[in-house]
Length: 492
Image (cartoon, rainbow, N blue to C red; front, side, top):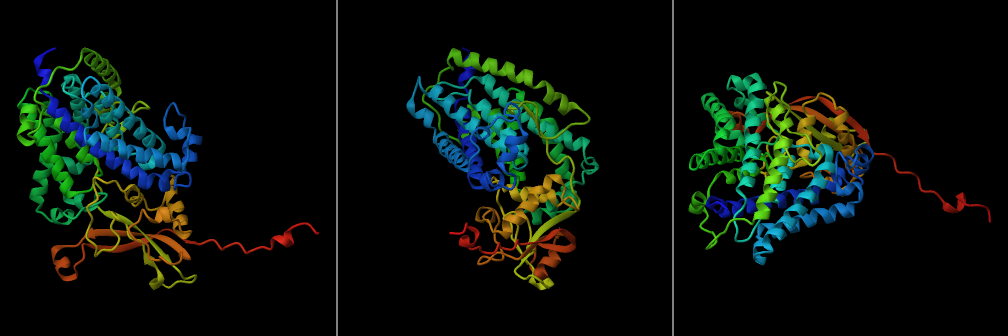
């Protein structure tokens, strides 16, 4: 076994801690949101998944056990197991059991999250979901204990990182003309899905800065990824550039765990010598991985190479598609983000009233955790937590009228009329806490960031103008009158 296979013990240790933390966040999101969104009585009920999908194409534990109880057990089990991985549980048992226990732990995490992604459908249709699964699958074969990881698995993780970054760069080059003109970022911070507390400030930086920023985006996403496979210290420099770029994206927007996961992937571009400067922790001695583990890693590499054909074809195609899987287990996927940039922000605002014949002043708004509604409320920092309902609201706002993919919106309004406490918990606040509203509707607005001069006078972060009614108003169903059971029974 060659000596350099032992130079990545610390790389593996830090990578596993980062991935375990993101798994924990993902399962916590599932525990809090999956049931009201896609559970038994969800906005997109799990029964639809069972009736419309096949287990072979979309494998999930919930295909056979579609109950909210099982969903809750799976989600909280995922949280618990992620914490075990986070604190390095497999390392505690020592050799020779550390590697098999580590493989079992990461396999269970991967299978559990696979169940949520495949059954979650629209609410789990994001690139970072499949990226977490692909990264989590490769983590199974890294091992644990005193031996180092098979270096071929680190190369495979670099391959995921390459497709993540290079795919994002290509989709921009082929997509919106504003990327080629270097002007996309002049509107991106205002129109992105969930602005964060710094987005307003970055949006108002000079146009020259945004052009330089767009140029830097192409350097990091198009040129730098090829250096991931270079010798050290060139690969280390590429990793630092990637992490710095992703940290800037985290600082200026809310993109769930996409940026954090990319940072975790970029750890595999380093060597222990570089990481030891930042993380002064390593075993006294480390050994080469056992031969059986290396053989298994080679077999995984062959599988990944075979499954990479379609993702590479897609990535190099003029008709490149973003964030697509080519196998039911999401083992090797294609990625990409923001191939086009919306130039204006159209926002959906839910309003309700307790009046049966309301005046304009009788309508009151629901507040979201991440989506803007009250122009005076500062944008929130929520990432790496993922607000699935907020993201879908952003997509829905791009359409002047709801389409078939937005049928969940009508069900959302029905749940708010009932009201459904689990669904209401997905929103920051509701205007009526004591009694359900009589009517509810969705109004479409045009939002823009206030200028520094406007904010100095009004204190608001946004300025908005009403575009029109999007959906509704919908009235609460009248309660059925009470009946006398004795009158309905047979004569005695």
